[in-house]
Image (cartoon, rainbow, N blue to C red; front, side):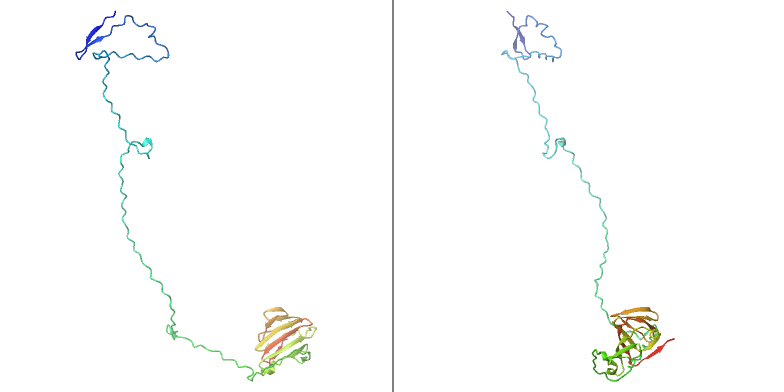
Length: 265
């Protein structure tokens, strides 16, 4: 039988110590196996109560570290609260005072008639000279007249023997103020027709009714006149009839009815 050994604990209580094992465990059981984790040695037996049971070691309570609450909106890596940053006040800028000039409202310009001064800078204005009114060739009364086409009215009793004239009765109706007639040119155009000449008139207007006529005017060269062409011959202008068609007819209006024609060499 194994003997029981009595041992006093530090508190003065008597505790029974279990008997020692007669034989040691075989060495093969404690042999280290390659690659295996070595087993931890059992802790030495501590004092137990008189009841024969081992007393549980008294452990001091361990306080869990207090963790700062992290807002749900912040990521985990920002759990630690950052030190508050002081806001820097913006630099003060000196206010500038700008003078604003208001534009005067526009006024509607009113034109005031100012009389023209009689003299400027001490110099009198020259008197306005009016051209003398021209007297009409005839001061007789005018009467109503009308002329209808009649072939018998074309007569070779006019200014040129190579033309027939139809008098429209205007000279008699205006008491010699104006003359109007239709001229039919007689073919062919000869050298007599081509003589250069001038007319002393106040007005001479020609309008082509039929055919065509080719003329030459001083300072204007040759001019081809056809049906509907109209021209004005100033008084004294040198001109020549170069050619015309066999059916050429023109209307000629001359002021005054009585005028002079001059042939040129």
